[in-house]
Image (cartoon, rainbow, N blue to C red):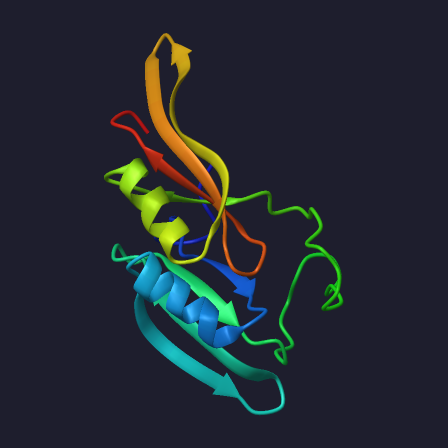
Length: 148
């Protein structure tokens, strides 16, 4: 079956920032992303930016006043984050432990400490993973593996 897209690869995940400036700092200063393309569209997007992971893949951040396609409903400021269709997004890491520690130092909340897992025996697939919660309630996985 042929893909309907060209260059079939993952491009970005988009999040709505509770605090736009704090979110930009978390991803740039805390996780090492590069601010790539800040933008606004009057009447539709108050503030937004693409943050480059360094490999041509991005996290796109939107301000609170932006009207964009989304899953679920926008939560009220006093509400806890709720589960939606997006369970987490994963960042490939050269060193999961260092990435996890760096994220915590930048203000993330610990979810699952770094650990090694064997996903399958035949073929052998081993991973080292960790999970944190980012500044907007987004769940971020760090993954280190030679096989996947």
